[in-house]
Image (cartoon, rainbow, N blue to C red; front, side):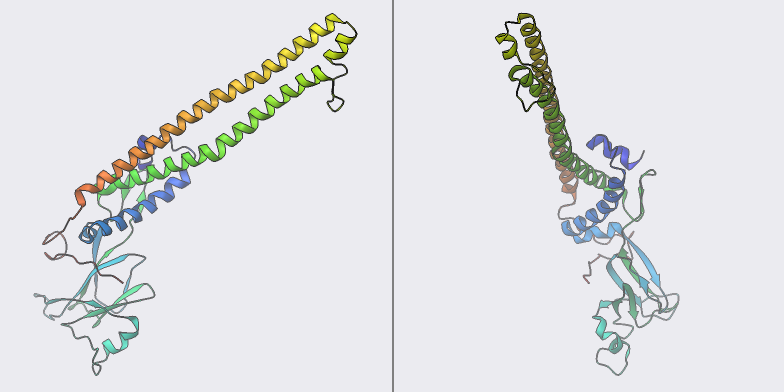
Length: 302
């Protein structure tokens, strides 16, 4: 089953929204990660992965969010002496590498900085004294396979509901801006045509083309047959106008029903989305051995 199929369960048909669904799935991943960090910064560990740096080449952040950086100060391969690296301003990188500077960063007090979207650790990590970087990156969405890389499955429903809300909102906009406007133009044109024709037959207005004589003319000439025929034609045109007005009323009722359903469904999906966040309010994640060394994660802002 695809994400699009599940989105359709909440938003109805997604036909015509292919490009939007692709875009909103990726935007939804970013929104859910941002919301998770706002709800509880510790939740971000669920979206994180750890990479090892053992050279001066740095680590490409690629728009990710750094949670934690540490470096090993022990040169022995069998043991570790891990120390958290602190974020420093870019303009202090040279002092941090200068042993004569008061800002020098020894192996027991490492630092890191961001330069051109790459993260660098000082002292420079090595194979025997590597650095570990815990970072959140926005995962790649595969709609048909229903997978998101570097993204916990427990938050897949959040993404589905987030996209469904956007689809429903887009449908409401389309109903009010496009469908109603085109319907009004169609009905008004047809009804006006019929009423104009009836007026031509009745009044013989010189400004109204394609009518050579009116009911008034036939009455004046006591031509009862033509009076009857003309009145019949007028009735036909009025009925045609009424038919179009009835058509307007039926379609308007259908539009109102569709709008009310879509609006109500949007409120329902919004409620479900908020309910999905309820279990995570006030969550803290401490000493989880599955994530980087039995450590409570702390979000580093940069």
